[in-house]
Length: 60
Image 1 (cartoon, helix red, strand yellow):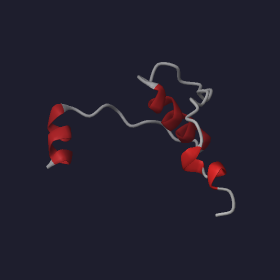
Image 2: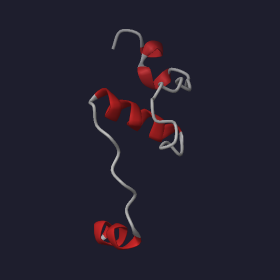
Image 3: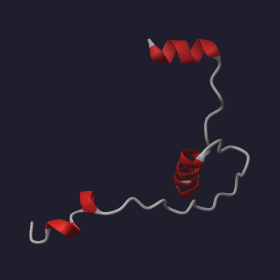
Image 4: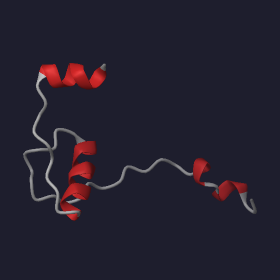
């Protein structure tokens, strides 16, 4: 490592700008917006919301 001060871990945290998405209703938080952006870039759509039984099955 030539210059430790330029190492990525020592850089200040910067909040990235949110990507544009065509579906404005699906994202419920900022992370969802980034996920939806990648889905749309690959011409995919989000899955339907899982019910309680499916969530329990996935967790066990």
